[in-house]
Image (cartoon, rainbow, N blue to C red; front, side, top):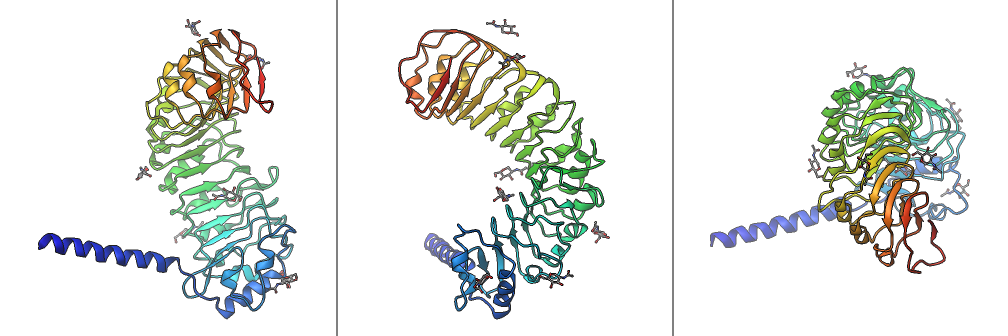
Length: 404
Ligand SMILES: *[C@@H]1O[C@H](CO)[C@@H](O)[C@H](O)[C@H]1NC(C)=O
Ligand SMILES: *[C@@H]1O[C@H](CO)[C@@H](O)[C@H](O)[C@H]1NC(C)=O
Ligand SMILES: *[C@@H]1O[C@H](CO)[C@@H](O)[C@H](O)[C@H]1NC(C)=O
Ligand SMILES: *[C@@H]1O[C@H](CO)[C@@H](O)[C@H](O)[C@H]1NC(C)=O
Ligand SMILES: *[C@@H]1O[C@H](CO)[C@@H](O)[C@H](O)[C@H]1NC(C)=O
Ligand SMILES: *[C@@H]1O[C@H](CO)[C@@H](O)[C@H](O)[C@H]1NC(C)=O
Ligand SMILES: *[C@@H]1O[C@H](CO)[C@@H](O)[C@H](O)[C@H]1NC(C)=O
């Protein structure tokens, strides 16, 4: 009896949560004021000629069904996705865009807002997602952004060539109150005056951070151990900064790390091998750090690595046989390092490989023992400048490039 009751209760809970899920997903009909704002906005949108959205923005239709729009149940516009579309020179503080006060997500990436970024964003007090990447030369990022305290994602990447910067406000002032941020992407934004202070700034204010991307930001090392506060970090991308630093051992404590990109960082010293063994790691790129030493450790049996790139470093030694465990590996680039020994036979297990570059190392032995015909996805294969011998069976299609 009791167990029956338990089961029916479970069923009720299940049905209830099912319906509440469905309901949450439901959209209401567009409210008049929201439609009016969108129509005003439409005056300044330049829909690309290939735009699939353009034709859906039609009078006498429910604006919640227009391309790039999502509404809540009451009919408020909560999401606006105008990637590639915006071509306005008229985005200013009084734009109707900033009157869409229910917006939770706003994506203006790859638009052409090639003017200074307007100061109206803080009117969007509910915004959780703001994507302004690849959009223009913004100059100074305005202080208004620092008041958008509900932001979870802020992507300001790649706006012009050093065309964006954080001077006044600086990084600390910008993020001080953005404590909900989980994704911060500022690639190409010059973080002036940060030098090595960035570690401390970010780890003090953004405890929930999962994605941190600061490529080409003019920051430098050493890495401060305060970074360890970022326990949820899963993506760390710092390519193209003159770090002049060693990679600290504590990086191997980021248990949720999936992506570590540190190319062109002027790193030196011995790279902590345990980082390669992190259980969630999918992509690691340490290339173009010619003074960075290290070797590849034994890999875990259920390794998830897709990309392993250490080209143009001082990595040395033989490849471990356990590299064959990396059954998801699609990119393996070890070009111009100092690897030696023979290519392990376990290589034949790497049948997801698309890009393999072992060139310009000291690999020895025969390549004939590798079952190359298993590499059906291979697009590039570079083995030149080694001490390898042996022949391929003719297994590659004409589309493959290979150099030996
Ligand atoms: C949006 O603007 C374009 C260009 O000004 C116009 O052709 C189109 O009819 C407008 N759409 C709506 C729904 O008003
Ligand atoms: C903002 O742009 C509109 C045109 O879209 C213009 O009429 C208005 O005067 C501008 N406001 C300011 C404060 O520049
Ligand atoms: C922002 O938009 C760009 C372009 O569509 C996309 O590549 C990028 O992943 C987006 N950023 C985030 C954090 O979603
Ligand atoms: C952050 O919030 C505090 C308290 O609400 C406020 O005094 C301060 O001015 C805010 N800082 C920024 C940069 O907005
Ligand atoms: C690591 O990821 C798992 C699964 O996504 C999550 O449950 C866990 O809370 C994360 N750990 C931290 C410290 O964020
Ligand atoms: C490979 O290089 C390492 C150090 O650079 C050396 O100790 C080792 O003997 C070399 N192994 C072979 C097989 O040449
Ligand atoms: C081969 O690697 C060495 C360093 O190990 C580098 O100096 C040289 O430029 C590389 N050659 C090519 C063709 O990449």
